[in-house]
Length: 455
Image (tube, rainbow, N blue to C red; front, side):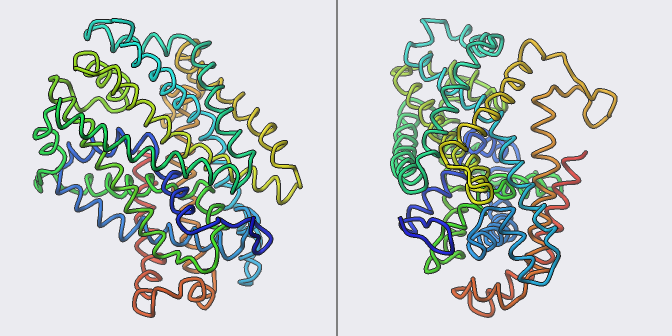
């Protein structure tokens, strides 16, 4: 294990890229991006989205990676250290804490949702117990109504992720992503081949890529900005802590472009493997999360080889989910190890148990506590269960605020020469462009996401 700046290092730039792409690629890439693209103008939306990736996602991704590598510390310590170096107040550590806490609370419910994929691997492999196509969608409602079953899969998924993180950077996270990420891409290509043979590939392709510029308006642009922002994994502590392990010889600029590009590629490939199957069976592509657990299982039951390819599809989802989950867990473990000197395995046991316990709240929000809406008196929280509240506060409030503060800190509080030192590959013109974006365009775009989320 190599050590630099008091922290571990990735063994190579490639393993860092695999881990960062794994962190960014999650369940949202599989269901949300393809659908939003299809209903928002297809190829026209893709062009707007790519512009948002270039002008918003990549600049903020570079900024967070830069903070992590320069400080070579966990997020709270990194923000405090760099603020002190720049002659600013150490209270900027609050931004690091926000990222760690956001990541931790997302872990609590992400593990529950990821557990559904494990349940559906078994369901798909069994042909959904011989259920008729009209009955398959109801099996998801049956799962949500069973807190013990959901808790079981939540527990299995949490233990799997914690076991990987407990083994450390090179023996745990690196070894996992070296297997999981290539496997994920292979399974995606396999599923696209299946969709091309058994599905309506032309209809799926046209839904995803036919450019309809009449659908592009302010709301669509804001949706593209939000999709680009939420997709790359910033403001959750994970990019900052992964950045702290990046060796000095690795280009942050090139890495950010590759990460964002691979993340977008996965989302587009997801559309090519999902929508041909949906259209071939006359199903609704606008089902959102239900697309994965209601619509597609209905398609798999009705198609040749559906049990095999259905199981492959849900295994693919599980791989995407666990690479994101281990990245979300790492920031709090890294901080506990660095600041409190808690041994990594012990830290995983302590914080893993806390996350698992809070996750039970999300489990019960789908059944026993589904009518419990504690903040009903506040208009913004009306009708929201405890799971909804955790999701809303982390995604709609804390993440955009944290990202805005990161952009402000890098663009307006860090010394320019420090930034130039970390980004030598850019050159003067590209650096000036990035510097202007992170100081002006990025904060304004993120403010738009925040306001949109509040509304």
